[in-house]
Image (cartoon, rainbow, N blue to C red):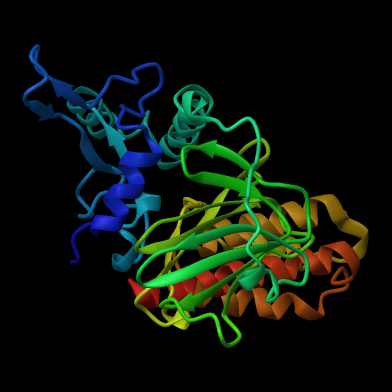
Amino acid sequence: MKSILPKTRKMLWGRAGARCSFNGCQVELIQLDEDHTSCAVIGEEAHIIAQKKDGARGQIAIEAERVNLYENLILLCPTHHTLIDTQPATYTVQALHEMKNQHEGWVDRNLGERNRSQEFHYLPDPAYERFCQHRLIHLWKYPKAHVFCDSYDSNPVEILSGVWKGSGLIFYRFTGAAVDKPPEYMFNTSEAQPEVEYRCDAEALEVTTFTYDPRVTGLTPFVTIRFEHDRPIERRLLTIRLMPDTAPIGPVVEYLKLPRSLANFELIEENLFRLRNIGLSTPRQALDRVRELQGAWWCDGAVAESLTDVTGHLEIALEAVKVE
C-alpha cells in the first residue's frame, strides 16, 4: 500500500493550520521550547477509515488507492487520535468528516484574518493582456513557467496569504519565459460553478473547486487540481477533498427510479448528490449506475444539469484513483 504523499501531508497540515482538528481542542501541533531553538512535532495524521479492516472504522468499504489520500485523513493531537480510534462507534466516518470541515472553517475564519488583503491590486502587463479576452488579474512569473489569469467576473479576494477565492476565471501558462506564441490553456470556471480557491508558487498552480453536499450546510471543497509547471497540463494531479458517504447505494438508486407520482424534484436532486458521495469510494461502479439514469423521466432542466455535474464529479474521482 502506498504511503502518504508529501503534497497530501502539506495540504493536511496547511488546511488544519498545524492544529488539532478535534472539536474544541485546536492545540498547536508544533511546540517550540522556551528559547525557540528547537521544536517538537506532536501532530498525528490519523486515518478516518483505517488501513486495515480490523482497525477503527476499517470495516467501511474504501478502495486501497484512496486510504492515504487527503479525504481520508484528519490531523490530530496524540490524545484525540487515541480517543477516536478507541471509540469508533462515537467517532464515525460521518462525525469525523464533519469535525474536519468545521475545523478547517475555523482556521479560515480565525487564523487567516491576520493575512487578509483588504483590496485587490494588479499592475497591468500588455505583453500578457493581448492573450486575454477579458481582464488580466494575476501574473506569476517563475523560472519554469509564467502563469496568468483572465477574469470575466468581479475581483477575487485573498482569503489567506497567497490563497485567493473567486469566480469567472481562466488560467493559462507559458512554459519558460517565451511569450511570442499563444499560451497553454489550463483551467476555466464556468459561469454556473461556485467560487474556487487557488494559489500559485514556483512549483505549481493549485485550484480547489467546491460543490453542494447534502450532509452539510452550504458548499464544501470537492477536488484540488494541481498543475505542476514541469509536467504536461493533461498530467494534472487530483486530490478528492470530499469524504465518501458510507451508506448503501441501492436505496438511493431505487428512489431515483420511482415513477413521477411518488417523487419530487427537490428530493431527486438531493439523492443525485448522495449517489455522488457514495460513489466516491467506487467511482467506476457508480458511473455505471448514474448513466443508467440519463433516460429517467425527471432528466430535464436544472435536475439534468445536476446529473451532468454528478457524472463529471465521478469521472474526476475515477481519474484521481488512476493518478494516485
